[in-house]
Image (cartoon, rainbow, N blue to C red; front, top):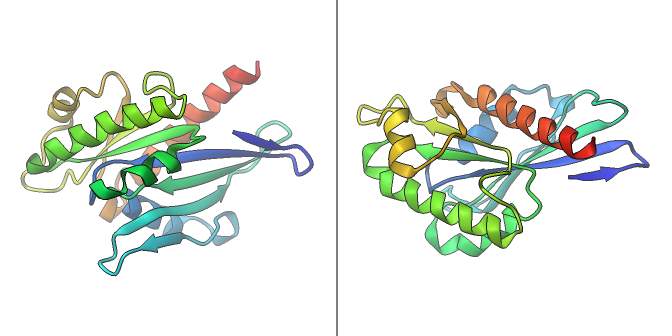
Length: 195
């Protein structure tokens, strides 16, 4: 959280984290496509020639007023490929909230578990905690024929009691529910910190 008092802006950072090809970038693309352009920045995406995220994706949303401040929500994704681990750690720095995008397909279970464990480590290295940071789980790709039920994913990965939302991001299903849930959680935590 960063407050620009001269502009009366509350800047918040939310990071979409998860294994490669889980749908992190798709979430931001759907948000960008469906939000009024006057309330949304351009989508900045650094991709490889295979159209995979290289460093991060970024979008800024302007959401009305909170008290006397105007919140600016900065949404980031991290690259999922294993050789970009240091990039994921850097993008998490200063995060106010995290969306963990789990790939629901059965054969991606180990990748989800690896990404979840790595998230916990990277948050700790950034002086954050997986237990206290606002965090929402998105069970993406629920339309796949081999999709695991969210309850099995939750238990197999050890996702604790974090709020979970079923999604099919490519169809826009669950994308805005996830965004609303994480922003509400971040706002609630910030309000607690400011009181």
